Image 1 (cartoon, one colour):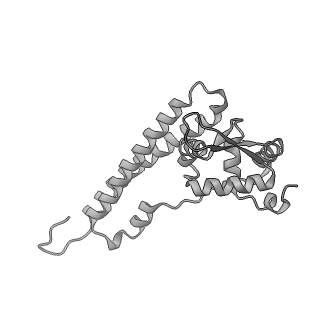
Image 2 (spheres, one colour):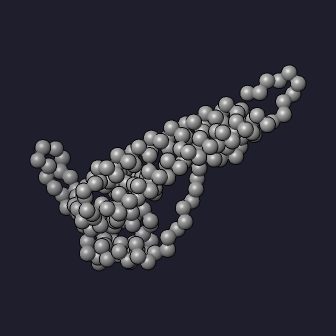
Image 3 (cartoon, helix red, strand yellow):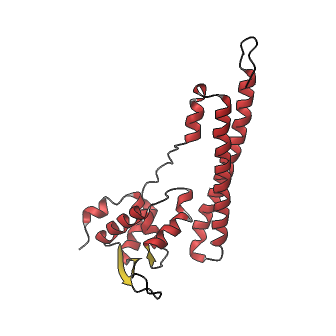
Length: 200
């Protein structure tokens, strides 16, 4: 019998793993990691293997997933694959339809550094923002590539939409960093300097 306590205490990351299984395929921990890195990491979670296996164990204990060992054709070590149960499908459907949607929590490292800009030299602040621009553009490109690879997969229609959202989000982050660089230039140009002191 499924553990009722596990059901009640299933964390959001557990629902995310169960959500990956809800697409109907039998997946290994490696597969789940790959699928998460191709979609979830852009907006929610970039899991480690240990996190994935911890959540899979919790899902099995709750009766929401089952597993079996599959022999590898290559002769390498057998692998364990997981499938969502009917009970798990009903549970994740109920959660997706009825659970409160938490607002996003912004933990923005470059913005925190900008907030402490009075402790940095202007050139250091510029470097932080330029690196953030490059990171955001890299993530935007990755989201585009992953969305392209999901084309034609009917089951991935909605995940593809989240990748489109991610593409727009990271494009916005890139452009916000560029605008902030202009703001810093304007701010440093307006700062008073001591006689004989050059502006940075």
